[in-house]
Image 1 (cartoon, rainbow, N blue to C red):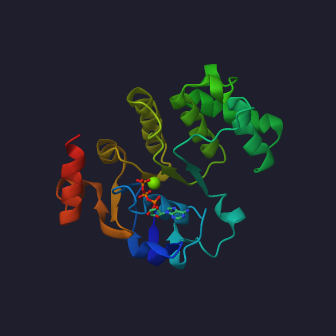
Image 2 (tube, rainbow, N blue to C red):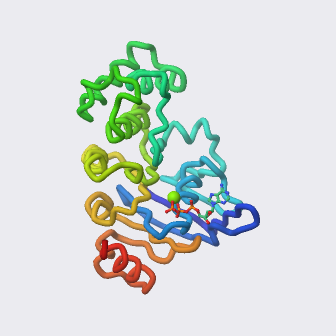
Length: 240
Ligand SMILES: Nc1ncnc2c1ncn2[C@@H]1O[C@H](COP(=O)(O)OP(=O)(O)OP(=O)(O)O)[C@@H](O)[C@H]1O
Ligand SMILES: [Mg+2]
């Protein structure tokens, strides 16, 4: 995946939460977005996934001009998974996936069901397809939301701390599912506080603080950070 951000500034309520962010990443399969709370990671992810548009600046993802491409067109290529699964509570896990395929992607009922069945099998959730979200564990529900975002075959997925609402065991289940995506050559950008996981799954990273990109590069660079703020951050998180 190629990621090009030129001079992105984003203002909320008069406050610059992204401050002239310029970022060029070529040929990464998975990018980890790292940084302390309030750094602007979720904001940058929302701009990359066109949930919001920046106050100013340009964004290109895999050659697509994100700001000047319609939502309808851009959303054909991308998917996102948030902190909370966001499944429709009144529908079964399976129906949560097929409804998107039928309504948004105009698949027939049969086509939608076939796609869903293959994915539930892949994510070891076949036995749980007919349960409502409230009858699933948090980790299972989060994996269903990954399936839902994958169902329309996006080329890039955006994840915002997909495990932060889960306990350590369920976190492992979801991280395992994300590692599988890498094996299937699905590209993604992931905001995560799990540094060990980021090293395992990503091949590039972006480190942010206070609305600015402080350092970015190949994931191995986390072993020898070039900037003091990233060194301090890694020392701090490694203590826990
Ligand atoms: N919708 C909004 N309205 C006003 N301010 C916002 C909004 N969303 C985010 N902010 C502010 O923007 C800044 C960056 O927030 P953001 O959510 O991008 O940080 P983050 O790096 O994802 O943090 P965390 O690790 O805690 O999720 C914060 O100061 C936050 O309060
Ligand atoms: Mg966030």
